Length: 118
Image (tube, rainbow, N blue to C red):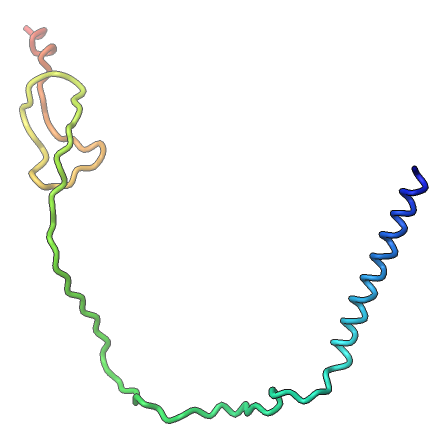
């Protein structure tokens, strides 16, 4: 069994060398022996001539104007969870103003604290 394994390895080594030789010969041909056939690429004119300009450039100001139509709809009200019970004494947030996380919204008196005070 060991003999056939080494023969198989020898076959793969020979195939690898043949493949690398073919690649090397192809690269040498491309690098040092260019194609001698006449192509249409040699007939191209690289002068870069263009037709007449259709728009003449002018100096001026650039302005961008954007007009949009639409409507603004209010978001629906969302319930707010209270952290304690009691009576609301003052509201610090006006109607329609933006509220962020941690903003103080109301001043309220806790019913348990007020009943325990003399």
